[in-house]
Image (cartoon, rainbow, N blue to C red; front, side, top):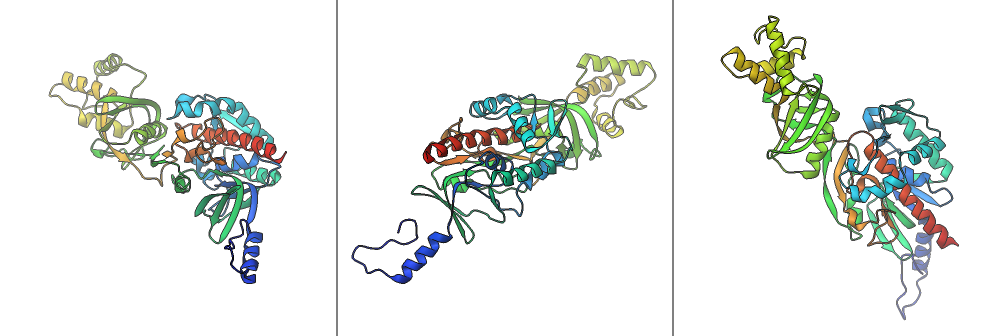
Length: 424
């Protein structure tokens, strides 16, 4: 009996108990055209795009789309009108999917699901500005697509078998012609399921956690916890510039948060290692000479470093830290020192916070083992990987969710073509 759990040895007598057991085993194993492992953003996008195929979504949580609820601080920045492969760590791999399944394709997909969107600058959000609106339309879409969603199902084993794959989840077993791994990473509340692909022969790069808060030497950040400021951050490694971001920064007890810090954290996560420093420019709209002129003009108006020089320019605690760090014995020397500090306030980086606070992970399955047009494995046919489980991550601003959608659409299109051809 093929696929039933037993094989009769040549010359051995038939055992009726074994026959009944094997028959029941085969009857109880659910079979599907496609099994999607992971009910997050990319997994639900795949299943929504496979209407007409018998599809199962296996989700470890008690509800599909749960991790999506935390996206964008609960607002869900689902894509960005300013899209390009250069916003990602792996532009050569992501470029094709992002071009074919671009922002317009994504917005059309969500419009069909019933989601109305709004735009802030170039960032796209649900019109309600709540992540639940996105997860709700995706879950409703799964029902309309006829997908079976099995929650509380953490996959423990994935094996290639004749005609497809066998997936084990607790006491349950499922068989599919095709399997899509869409489990993301263990950033935030997720799981690291790359081991499932490793058992199929794939290689994986250990996750590091980007879009995260930066731990710093806090000796120059005393009293700043909770203070927000618009500024520019430049990241250096061993004295060499690695990146620059401008925007809001939120000071924390342990270091830096906010969008500008998040984007630099992704560079740290990708490169890893030590020797990083962050330089804060508190007046990025002025060059150093213009800052010097501003301070000189304030001195001419009667202000001094010891009497209100920085009042009205900066938050009082930022002003206090700058004045405390300024060197020099004369007023001219202190003004020169303050000018440098305002444009170059250097903070030593100690590392990143862990996976629990991260929005995305850098690392995952090596992309040279997947077709960048279809997301199908080149070493295990019928196996696909989409979204964050692949070593492809983007900057803050909707880029990681756009990769989830684009890679999902690419995989679904190829799966539909392949299975329709088989069925014919």
